[in-house]
Length: 381
Image (cartoon, rainbow, N blue to C red; front, top):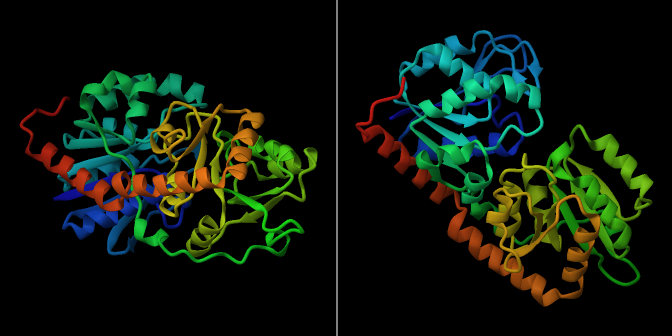
């Protein structure tokens, strides 16, 4: 079976949840004998063809981006050219460039769409794009939702419930088994009262992550230390917030780290917090990584997959979004109840093994491909 995956970016070189997921899925499918190709945008105005782990990656020239959507006049051409030889097209949504290109390409192929997230803040783009998006989803044979929560809470996805299939994202759990402690920076190695309670955030510093709320919560957590792994457009604002709330001694920016160092930090921390404030946080792969390391997690109730991954008072705690007081109280509860913290971590590790392994995700995706391929249903035109 030949499958073409379509999105705007790919890991490597772009680090991100969707980009990393496509990499894991593509390589897993390749190991199952599927012929996989990747069609993405190039950040430069020239065509590039690369082989990454023996998977062809075609990068179409890009003129720039508007509301994160790449401008690729030639994308419909390359989608049609590569899609003609594919048995199945796998789109990763949202990506208006790819979806519009499919509508303009005239291709009549079996299609599956992984619905990663609603369009949340780009209201102007959404109003223009809505009729095309609706038509695109109508034409899809199957839509993958990464959690049952997102089907119910998404105004768009709930309309296509009949063609939705829930396949949670998965990771290589074996990578997170090593229990090697990180050499923490000197100022976090200990205090007169002993080792501080380590709070960890990992992710891009984007508007929807709510890191500023977590920084504010540190005002009430003098005996805790917050490590922030990542970079992003909100970094300058977050650094100002640290000074504004006078928590400079409690917060440290670590920047980007290697995968090995990330895993070491996960094993060394006491809790991972994902304080998201918007539905753009549709899943949260970092939560799986923390659970695989046996760590409790704290998330916010935003009606997405984060509340599918994290089970309140079982694998961690779920609090109100955009509320620093709720975050600080949840963290204080875990600080003062180490047995509960440990039980949450153990339960999370079991849940990760049962539901969020790379193997399970790949097998279920392959089964869906086969079901679509053997279906006698006509493609909607």
